[in-house]
Amino acid sequence: MEESTTEVTINQAKLRIIQGDITQQDTEAIVNAANPSLMGGGGVDGAIHRAGGPAILEECKQIVSRQGRLPTGKAVITGGGNLKAKYVIHTVGPIWHGGQKGETELLASAYQESLKLAAENNIRSLSFPSISTGAYGYPVAQAAKVAVGAVTAFLRQSPTSVREVVLVLFDSQTFSVYLSALKEQ
Ligand code: ADP
Figure 1: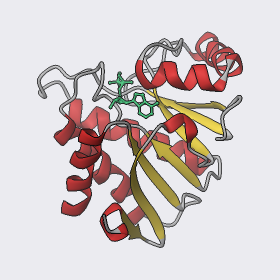
Figure 2: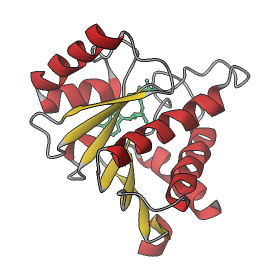
Figure 3: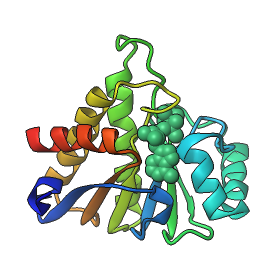
Figure 4: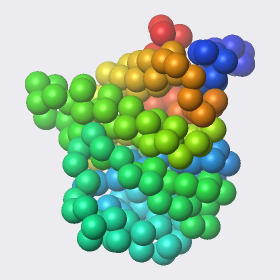
């Protein structure tokens, strides 16, 4: 596969897609597809808490006790515990209810709010998983378009600290769908 097909440059920042495990990424931050309780769970959320250790959950509990459950489309930041990444940005994607319940806007918001929080914290590089396309049931092709569109729009704005965004897809099928979305961009 040619390198050019998996990476685009926008405003001197890179948007890259790879197949892999987000817990192993060495970007400055990784994004967690959390749920509103921030108490961990299955899928990528469970994997991040297992790999990162209890410090992340401790911080999540403190956030919830301060501000309550995390609404869909919003994001918060914690340290990265034992991960290579220094930070974890926890966001909540929408549950798919057929597409007429604001799912597109809420998914775009999850990406945008995470990127905004990264910029506010002077983060230069971050990795995203495929938010909402596991247990939350969002169709992958539609989610891929939203993800690529939201990141591209963010990077096109006035320059921020964010220089590199990596979309980390766990399985080859999801990876190839995101690859198509990136090519169509
Ligand atoms: P959601 O509840 O937002 O749908 P899930 O964790 O169920 O979140 O799934 C989101 C995506 O994350 C799915 O494509 C799933 O295959 C993927 N995933 C699961 N584990 C990992 C991991 N370690 N690294 C990257 N992606 C992962």
